[in-house]
Amino acid sequence: MLTSLKSCLKELLIEPNCAICKRLSFSEAQPPDLCETCRHRLGLAETAITGTSPLPWHAACWYNRDMRRLILSLRRNHNINALQALCTILQRNLPQQSLLVPIPGWKEQSRANPIPDLMCGCLDRPALQLLQRCRPTVGQHRLSQKQRVSNQRNSFSLKRSSAQQLMPHGKRDQVQEEIWLVDDILTTGATVLAAQQALQASGIAVRGVLCLARTGLKVPPRDLRFKCRADNAPG
Image (cartoon, rainbow, N blue to C red; front, side, top):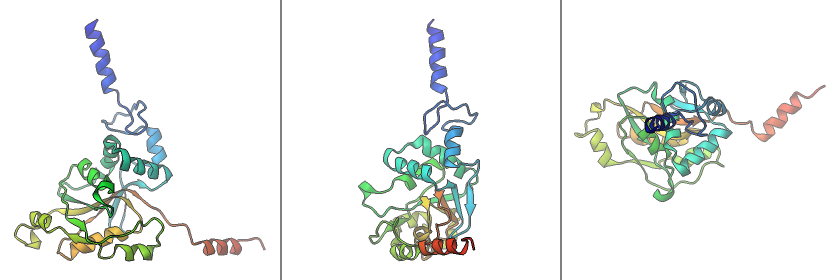
């Protein structure tokens, strides 16, 4: 009787649950994993989506309403299992000789975005805090692309103590790792470009950006939408 009970408990403990919705998952993948419903809802594929602008980038999926909700939730509740499942997609094509550099947030430490640092832990590659914020910036969700570039310009500086770990003798040609910036969302690229420029000024080349989600094409300006409608009107 006791043996049977232990067997039942063991089966319950290893039953794979979706890392997001917690429903039973019958996927053959190793946990943590996501159920097919959550994968479809988030638009996840087996491998990362990639692009080259403004820097080479890899993303787990395109940014959509459900992904926005998940990212906001991850910032609050730090669901490591869900984040690990997303990062597995990014990890598949990530070279072993990679060094991850998380993008530091612009808010004070107690309110800062924790996701870049948590992603580094989930990606199973060495990480180094090479960047720090050197001046305050404002939230960007209501800024145009031009305003975002201005907002982020010269907002990062190099952490000299961390840079010495990367280049102990100050020799720039000794950096063998591929340097990847890590952030949760890539939109216009103003933030990652400012981070890249800070590293590049010290002779540290950036290979690209890893993110959970990449935003798609922007909706045309209001006056342009109206013009298109007028041009396509009957007659």
